[in-house]
Amino acid sequence: MSPIDKVFWLRIGFAVLAGIVAGALGFLSNNPQAFRGIGIGFLLYFITYLIARFSLGKRIPPSESRKLVTTGMGGYVFMFLLVWILYNTFMYQQFAGEQGQ
Image (tube, rainbow, N blue to C red):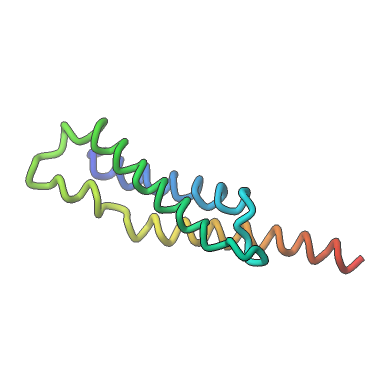
């Protein structure tokens, strides 16, 4: 697996983690501070950049160093939002079920 592929899969894994953390910290749809969950996503994306730069950056030619920032960006955003929305949906469904009883 090439270093760029490792960066992609690192970002996908961190996107899942970011979605779960954003939901678990209470940034759900019924919370007025829900927009702060986006900050969690940005923070963990930046952490993936640091991990990629310091652990895999030596194996990537200088001409492709920009790929450390852009590789997996779209996948990260979509996976983060998917997991966060699914977490929100399951938690909201649980709360709605408790209120309906």
